[in-house]
Length: 349
Ligand SMILES: Cc1ncc(COP(=O)(O)O)c(C=O)c1O
Image 1: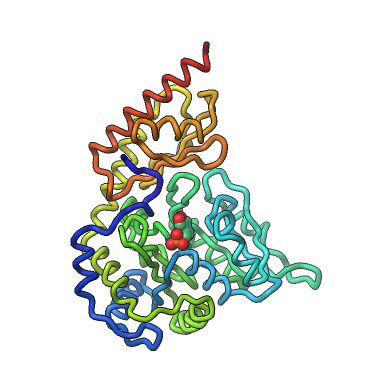
Image 2: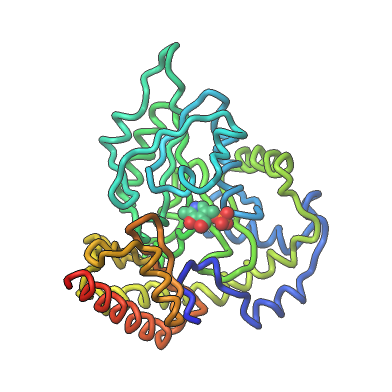
């Protein structure tokens, strides 16, 4: 099976498992797990932030950030394809009492003009605009990389109007790898930012949320309330430290594999790609010209041993990851092309 469903499917490598087994541990909740502390310091330094807190998931990083930055009745601004809006079970509304303004986008990137129009002037009758969130890279719309200058314009405009600025950096390091722009340059000036360990970096669990010391202290309280405080979390943090030492280079391979796959299937019959496709490790395309749904197309590829993901009725997402090498990508390209040709021929007759 060639599994390109998501980079969350990766399994800990033998070296990572050894590092986990050797981890020095303590009690995370009381701040005395040395390996977790080391991981938080390391990621905070990487992102140029004052402090960090280890979280069980990226979803909890987003939720804790929203909970710290807002109060019930506030509104947050995100893109319409974002993880916060689509696949976090409306946690911000359910737990934070916050409404979500999802800006319409083609591939998850909104503009300063959209933010300008979305921020509400203070009014008794309106929710308070409290937070703007940028997803770097975009997840459901093809791993598109936000331009750092645009991020800064949005950050500055929002902050000047009293909003907080947040980065969902689940795949920030894929953007860093793609552009050569350091993570700290992307994160600079934002009020909160996090990276996921359980995606391209290959860890089984975890994410690190960073910001000012005061922000992290407040996020810690939400982590505790949400049941995310841990005990001997060093076993998990050791995987994160190992990944930062050994798996960053893999992200370049993942990005290159997605770009290779894009070139190999770009002219396959019936498949359509956005002009931004192939910027990082995620590749999206639609199956409009094939006369079948995305689910049917994904099921057909699975019969040939290639697992890809249907996102909605027309869109497919393919995610390069450390468990699939170039030979696997080549095989995936062959299968996707062959299945597309077969469906396209059938659609024409
Ligand atoms: C952009 C983005 N944000 C947040 C998350 C949530 O991360 P986790 O699965 O660690 O909760 C994901 C996971 O797929 C994601 O892709």
